[in-house]
Amino acid sequence: MEQDVKITITDREGVAHEVMAPTDMAMNLMEVVRSYELAPEGTIGTCGGMAMCASCQCYVINGTPLPEMEDEEEAMLSEAFFVKENSRLSCQIPITPELEGLEVELAPES
Image (tube, rainbow, N blue to C red; front, side, top):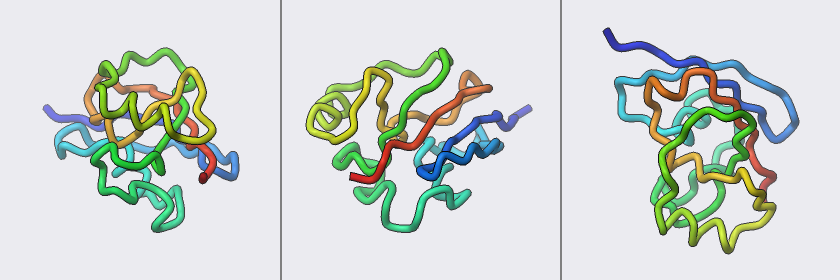
């Protein structure tokens, strides 16, 4: 049985949104942010989820296990603004059952 996972996303105004993300639609975290309209249109995922921009950067707040960072994501974050130890590109985080309880905060717009 496919299930949704509960993810808490804090937007750029500091408001936390508890959202349900489907694990059966091959979505990534950036697409979830867009589908719930938690960031203004055109300010997130501007490259279409190819790890070619950092507009979808987020900070991972809790210890939910995430997939390893690929080289492209690491390279992109090395050039991005407002990068922290816990920065990830949300387009590189697929929605899987393991993400249940994930908490992230959207990075400021650069």
